[in-house]
Amino acid sequence: MFYQVIKVGKDEIGLVWDEAGKKVRVEYVYLPGDKGKMANRIVRDFPAVHKTQHSISKDIDQLIAGLYNGQKKNFDLSLLNLSKLTDFSAKVLRQTYKIPHGKVATYSGLAAKIGNPRAARAVGTALADNPFPILIPCHRVIRADGQLGQFGGGSDMKKKLLEREGIIIDPQGVVPLKHMSY
DNA sequence: CGCGAATCATTGT
DNA sequence: ACAATGATTCGCG
Image (cartoon, rainbow, N blue to C red; front, side):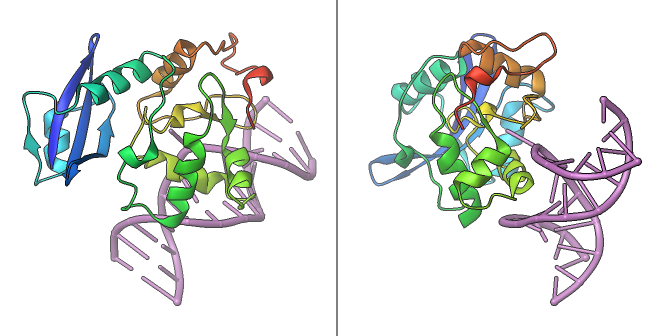
Protein backbone atom coordinates (compact mmCIF):
# COMPACT_ATOMS: atom_id res chain seq x y z
CA MET A 1 0.00 0.00 0.00
CA PHE A 2 1.34 3.42 -0.96
CA TYR A 3 0.46 7.04 -0.68
CA GLN A 4 1.42 10.30 -2.22
CA VAL A 5 0.35 13.89 -1.94
CA ILE A 6 -0.76 15.60 -5.11
CA LYS A 7 -0.33 19.35 -5.29
CA VAL A 8 -3.15 21.08 -7.10
CA GLY A 9 -2.40 24.76 -7.15
CA LYS A 10 -2.20 25.68 -3.51
CA ASP A 11 -4.10 22.64 -2.27
CA GLU A 12 -2.91 19.17 -1.41
CA ILE A 13 -4.88 16.02 -2.13
CA GLY A 14 -3.84 12.76 -0.50
CA LEU A 15 -4.00 9.54 -2.46
CA VAL A 16 -3.70 6.00 -1.12
CA TRP A 17 -3.47 3.14 -3.57
CA ASP A 18 -2.41 -0.43 -3.89
CA GLU A 19 -1.20 -2.59 -6.74
CA ALA A 20 -2.89 -5.86 -7.48
CA GLY A 21 -0.54 -7.37 -10.03
CA LYS A 22 -0.02 -4.68 -12.60
CA LYS A 23 -3.25 -2.88 -11.90
CA VAL A 24 -3.29 0.25 -9.74
CA ARG A 25 -6.25 0.45 -7.42
CA VAL A 26 -7.17 3.58 -5.51
CA GLU A 27 -8.05 2.91 -1.88
CA TYR A 28 -8.74 6.38 -0.56
CA VAL A 29 -8.72 10.04 -1.49
CA TYR A 30 -8.09 12.76 1.10
CA LEU A 31 -9.48 16.20 0.53
CA PRO A 32 -7.32 19.28 1.12
CA GLY A 33 -7.42 21.37 4.21
CA ASP A 34 -8.78 20.75 7.67
CA LYS A 35 -6.94 19.67 10.73
CA GLY A 36 -3.63 17.85 10.91
CA LYS A 37 -1.05 17.42 8.22
CA MET A 38 -2.08 15.25 5.35
CA ALA A 39 0.57 12.60 5.96
CA ASN A 40 -0.45 12.22 9.59
CA ARG A 41 -4.04 11.53 8.70
CA ILE A 42 -3.06 8.97 6.11
CA VAL A 43 -0.67 7.03 8.29
CA ARG A 44 -3.21 6.98 11.10
CA ASP A 45 -5.85 5.48 8.83
CA PHE A 46 -3.53 3.11 6.97
CA PRO A 47 -0.77 1.91 9.31
CA ALA A 48 0.74 -0.30 6.62
CA VAL A 49 1.13 2.47 4.09
CA HIS A 50 4.42 3.36 2.41
CA LYS A 51 5.31 6.78 1.17
CA THR A 52 6.42 7.26 -2.40
CA GLN A 53 8.26 10.36 -3.52
CA HIS A 54 7.64 9.96 -7.20
CA SER A 55 4.08 9.61 -8.38
CA ILE A 56 3.30 6.11 -9.47
CA SER A 57 0.95 7.23 -12.16
CA LYS A 58 1.02 10.57 -13.95
CA ASP A 59 -2.35 9.72 -15.43
CA ILE A 60 -3.99 9.52 -12.05
CA ASP A 61 -2.30 12.71 -10.91
CA GLN A 62 -3.73 14.56 -13.84
CA LEU A 63 -7.11 12.91 -13.49
CA ILE A 64 -7.47 14.05 -9.89
CA ALA A 65 -6.04 17.49 -10.48
CA GLY A 66 -8.30 17.99 -13.48
CA LEU A 67 -11.42 16.90 -11.68
CA TYR A 68 -10.57 19.06 -8.71
CA ASN A 69 -10.30 22.03 -11.06
CA GLY A 70 -13.70 21.32 -12.53
CA GLN A 71 -12.60 19.79 -15.81
CA LYS A 72 -14.60 17.04 -17.38
CA LYS A 73 -12.68 13.78 -17.26
CA ASN A 74 -13.63 10.15 -17.63
CA PHE A 75 -12.23 7.11 -15.88
CA ASP A 76 -13.29 3.56 -15.24
CA LEU A 77 -14.71 2.45 -11.92
CA SER A 78 -12.26 -0.44 -11.93
CA LEU A 79 -9.68 2.12 -10.88
CA LEU A 80 -11.26 2.09 -7.43
CA ASN A 81 -11.25 -0.62 -4.82
CA LEU A 82 -14.91 -0.87 -3.90
CA SER A 83 -14.58 -4.23 -2.23
CA LYS A 84 -14.50 -2.88 1.31
CA LEU A 85 -17.88 -1.23 0.98
CA THR A 86 -21.22 -2.51 2.17
CA ASP A 87 -23.76 -3.40 -0.52
CA PHE A 88 -25.75 -0.30 0.18
CA SER A 89 -22.77 2.05 0.07
CA ALA A 90 -21.55 0.47 -3.14
CA LYS A 91 -24.94 1.05 -4.75
CA VAL A 92 -24.96 4.65 -3.63
CA LEU A 93 -21.45 5.30 -4.90
CA ARG A 94 -22.00 3.59 -8.22
CA GLN A 95 -25.09 5.69 -8.78
CA THR A 96 -23.29 8.86 -7.73
CA TYR A 97 -20.55 8.05 -10.23
CA LYS A 98 -23.16 8.35 -12.98
CA ILE A 99 -24.13 11.93 -12.22
CA PRO A 100 -22.92 13.88 -15.25
CA HIS A 101 -20.34 16.64 -15.05
CA GLY A 102 -22.06 19.96 -14.50
CA LYS A 103 -25.23 18.38 -13.14
CA VAL A 104 -26.52 17.62 -9.67
CA ALA A 105 -28.79 15.03 -8.08
CA THR A 106 -30.59 14.99 -4.75
CA TYR A 107 -30.12 12.60 -1.83
CA SER A 108 -33.73 11.48 -2.19
CA GLY A 109 -33.36 11.14 -5.95
CA LEU A 110 -30.41 8.83 -5.54
CA ALA A 111 -32.31 6.86 -2.93
CA ALA A 112 -35.15 6.32 -5.36
CA LYS A 113 -32.74 5.41 -8.12
CA ILE A 114 -31.23 2.57 -6.14
CA GLY A 115 -34.61 1.26 -5.06
CA ASN A 116 -34.89 2.63 -1.50
CA PRO A 117 -37.05 5.71 -1.97
CA ARG A 118 -37.24 6.46 1.72
CA ALA A 119 -33.55 6.13 2.43
CA ALA A 120 -32.50 9.68 1.64
CA ARG A 121 -30.82 10.10 4.94
CA ALA A 122 -29.01 6.81 4.72
CA VAL A 123 -27.73 7.92 1.33
CA GLY A 124 -26.34 10.99 3.05
CA THR A 125 -24.48 8.95 5.63
CA ALA A 126 -23.14 6.65 2.93
CA LEU A 127 -21.80 9.64 1.02
CA ALA A 128 -20.34 11.08 4.19
CA ASP A 129 -18.14 7.99 4.28
CA ASN A 130 -17.25 8.14 0.59
CA PRO A 131 -13.62 6.99 0.41
CA PHE A 132 -13.19 8.56 -3.03
CA PRO A 133 -14.29 12.20 -2.99
CA ILE A 134 -13.56 14.05 -6.26
CA LEU A 135 -13.44 10.73 -8.12
CA ILE A 136 -16.90 9.72 -6.97
CA PRO A 137 -18.52 13.14 -7.30
CA CYS A 138 -20.42 13.29 -4.04
CA HIS A 139 -20.20 17.07 -4.25
CA ARG A 140 -22.87 16.83 -6.97
CA VAL A 141 -25.42 15.53 -4.50
CA ILE A 142 -27.54 18.23 -2.91
CA ARG A 143 -30.72 18.55 -0.89
CA ALA A 144 -34.23 18.29 -2.24
CA ASP A 145 -34.88 21.97 -1.52
CA GLY A 146 -31.92 22.98 -3.69
CA GLN A 147 -29.62 23.84 -0.79
CA LEU A 148 -26.13 22.43 -1.04
CA GLY A 149 -26.27 20.22 2.02
CA GLN A 150 -23.18 19.10 3.86
CA PHE A 151 -19.80 18.06 2.56
CA GLY A 152 -16.75 16.44 4.11
CA GLY A 153 -14.43 19.21 2.94
CA GLY A 154 -16.78 21.96 4.06
CA SER A 155 -19.74 23.49 2.27
CA ASP A 156 -17.57 26.28 0.89
CA MET A 157 -15.52 23.69 -0.95
CA LYS A 158 -18.64 21.94 -2.21
CA LYS A 159 -19.78 25.25 -3.64
CA LYS A 160 -16.43 25.89 -5.32
CA LEU A 161 -16.32 22.44 -6.87
CA LEU A 162 -19.78 22.90 -8.35
CA GLU A 163 -19.05 26.39 -9.61
CA ARG A 164 -15.88 25.19 -11.31
CA GLU A 165 -18.06 22.76 -13.22
CA GLY A 166 -20.12 25.65 -14.47
CA ILE A 167 -23.00 25.40 -12.06
CA ILE A 168 -24.35 28.77 -11.08
CA ILE A 169 -25.51 28.94 -7.47
CA ASP A 170 -27.88 31.76 -6.66
CA PRO A 171 -27.08 34.33 -3.94
CA GLN A 172 -29.17 32.43 -1.41
CA GLY A 173 -27.10 29.29 -1.87
CA VAL A 174 -29.67 27.43 -3.91
CA VAL A 175 -28.91 25.45 -7.04
CA PRO A 176 -31.31 26.30 -9.90
CA LEU A 177 -33.52 23.49 -11.15
CA LYS A 178 -31.97 23.51 -14.59
CA HIS A 179 -28.97 21.69 -13.20
CA MET A 180 -30.95 18.83 -11.74
CA SER A 181 -30.23 15.57 -13.42
CA TYR A 182 -32.56 13.39 -11.42
C1' DC B 1 -41.03 29.39 7.79
C1' DG B 2 -39.58 26.67 11.88
C1' DC B 3 -40.07 22.15 14.19
C1' DG B 4 -40.56 17.42 14.91
C1' DA B 5 -41.44 12.87 13.45
C1' DA B 6 -40.33 9.51 10.03
C1' DT B 7 -36.90 6.70 7.83
C1' DC B 8 -32.98 3.55 7.26
C1' DA B 9 -28.16 1.68 6.87
C1' DT B 10 -24.24 1.47 9.86
C1' DT B 11 -21.65 1.19 14.06
C1' DG B 12 -20.60 0.45 18.76
C1' DT B 13 -21.86 -1.91 23.06
C1' DA C 1 -29.79 -7.81 19.54
C1' DC C 2 -30.48 -3.00 20.38
C1' DA C 3 -29.76 1.87 20.88
C1' DA C 4 -27.59 5.73 18.97
C1' DT C 5 -26.24 8.43 15.10
C1' DG C 6 -26.39 11.16 10.84
C1' DA C 7 -23.94 15.05 4.17
C1' DT C 8 -32.40 14.20 4.76
C1' DT C 9 -37.28 14.91 3.97
C1' DC C 10 -42.10 16.11 4.51
C1' DG C 11 -46.03 17.59 6.65
C1' DC C 12 -48.17 20.62 10.14
C1' DG C 13 -49.19 24.57 12.79
